[in-house]
Length: 154
Image (cartoon, rainbow, N blue to C red; front, side, top):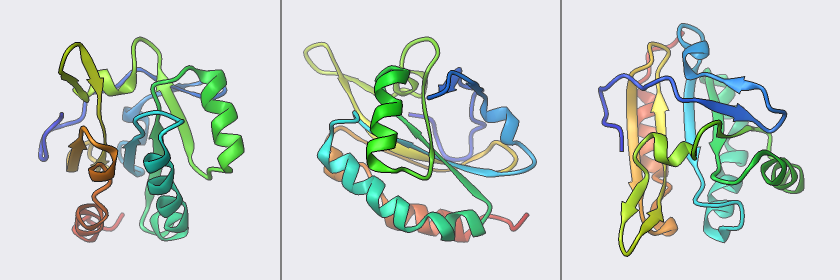
């Protein structure tokens, strides 16, 4: 997992419409909260996203763009986003999964996908990084809230 204080790499992502999404495009304009759902079928991850949806207006007011990264392909991600009525852009990997790109894979009898979140400031610096193998531990609301309060207003 990427570390707090490091600069986020420019991940190769795409949204559910197939448009390229580059984290570098948000530099200088938006903070980005990148939430990594273990899968679209993970009930715990879906509960976490419900909480993020409730915070959507607050996050927008704080200049935070929320991106939800899923390991599935575009078609499945688009159907899931529509079904859940998510107000956030959902992204997938262009090459591999977004999870692999940031080190959210744990080697245990093969590979086990993890979930978690990154808060990236307008300068591309990671201000919050949290990951967990068990989805119940993957959403660090207090840590995200604390990191949001420390962001410099834009």
